[in-house]
Length: 451
Ligand SMILES: [Zn+2]
Image: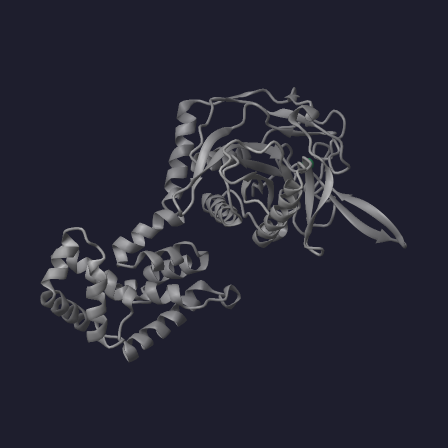
């Protein structure tokens, strides 16, 4: 088999958690409700019903764009995307074609690689088809509760070259929309849905492949990984035979563990987009966008990647411990509770962070964050008393190690940061396992910075 590299672009749909739907006053909390109870002439697509855009939803879309570093054009509009499907009663979806609310942003992965965001635009969700058996007859039923739910579509450039990159991007995106407070992005409930566009090129080839395969119907991080692995094998086999894989839409079948052809892929021209005549274009003022940007900047302080340096600088945690906590919602809440409730003495918060990063936590065990934090704070304090050293004892030992190893200290200060590992080793020997290497390293770094 020849060597191939993956070329993947992603389309992600995120439902916004506004009170009402995108273009009508129907309640937006459709999930789990009795079918067709959250409907009105607008979201049922009845003739003559007129859409009224939801301001909160549009702000949500713009905020997502801002958090992704996108440009927000001063002029935007809605367009009609025409296609027929039973779950789309109007025969068209109100979406955005050439003037979306935001475009040209990026998400940076932990490797430092930037994934380009083409656009984040606003549209409406469709109804939901349910396949059932009624009186022994197989039928398809339609529930319009989801019809008209505000939906933001976030499209990337074809910048991914592995399933791991896709997964990391999706996790980051999910956290961003959650921290902004605009979406729950619960994949089990279909509130965040993914469609990777997958193709292959020969290793070393720089131009993009002349085909792409879109995989729909993916509602978990693990399915997207499996679908990408499956498509890699399938497309590589075809390319090896000298065939070009068909440009098409496929669906992931979790039972069969394979993708299945659904239809040939539509081009933009097939949708006959035209400006939505019932909604005038939007013209933003700089002042208005600035006020939204301020809100986004405030929320961004709490994004995981921005909390890592705070944990490291304020509490002396290692990068590894700080990252583990910052990227776990439950650990972040527990650590925050320990700080605000004072369940751990202020001097021990760094060590508590290391402890918290290394224990197993089952989310379902946590019924009440405050109670849970108190329990594990007690466990931590007890363990520290049994096996740990007091802060004073630790500081004395570390200072002794620094005094005895002047050369390593000098090397470290000259920029040979690896010299610290020798010092950690010496300190660990003195401590006889009474402290974690992570903690010792962080404490040494503090001492060296202040000496
Ligand atoms: Zn409605």
